[in-house]
Length: 210
Image (cartoon, rainbow, N blue to C red; front, side):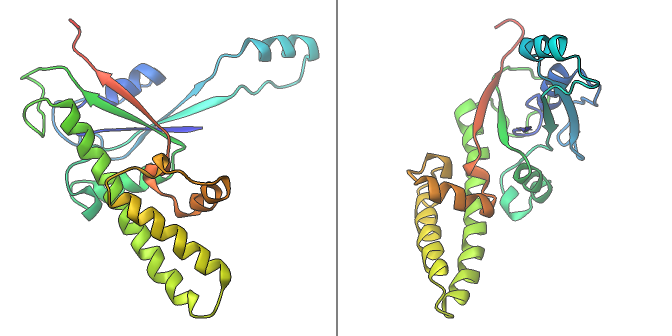
């Protein structure tokens, strides 16, 4: 399983990554300290695996692992390529789920791209950029499938209907994961690699005194 840590610049993504993986990475007081994604692998403790290993005594024991990816910070306009937007979004497409880190701590010595701390606004910035990126993906796919539809392919007709439903939902600024889809539809949309279809864990980065 791959978990991508995302958020605005200077919210503490690399610090969280270090805490989770015990891996040394650069942490600096300026936006886009992280350009290339940091990757760390953590074994998942499982007493059942230890018990089975003691019983069977295999030559090799391979525990389950979680791969954490510290992804470059996002800014407004990322879906248009602003900042490191294209790189940011391409890395998110590869992960299984998203850890969305939001800054709540106030520290004038640590630069903040949005100025005043506002957790709701900051979360919405990231969410909206992912939605707009998905809209671009859906529009591009719709154009392609509509051309294929002229051949009379029934599956293309079904896909056009599904994409239209997704586009309508995204236009309401709602994530795809909140859609009421059938199991078959959820399987079909996996091939679209939509960012807002991924599960999200929200993490608040508070001050040491909180």
